[in-house]
Image (cartoon, rainbow, N blue to C red; front, side):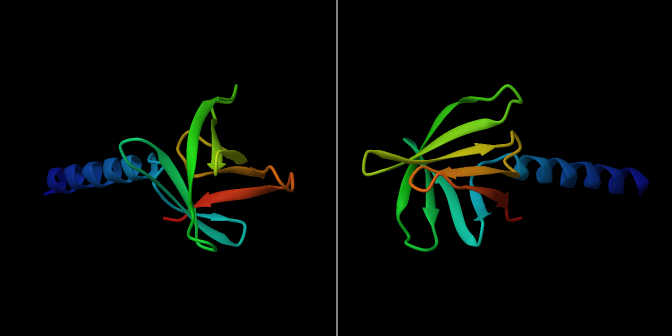
Length: 107
């Protein structure tokens, strides 16, 4: 019985790690809910305030191995997400206002 329980816990833990290591999902950007998604061609971020899908373009990793994603709308860069490698949190910089906001994944 202990072996079965142990195997079940290993599988459950592995599934939780896999889930948390995906960019797709809901995040809080300050007080605003945003959703990251993707299709065969692009990654997207959709803001709950306006429902507009903005394209995300992967740029590079920082020296701390965080990932940099540039946000585009109507062929203009609108912001940058710098996310931890496990996609649990990060910082967003709005290019219009030059303000930074904390980003946190909702589980």
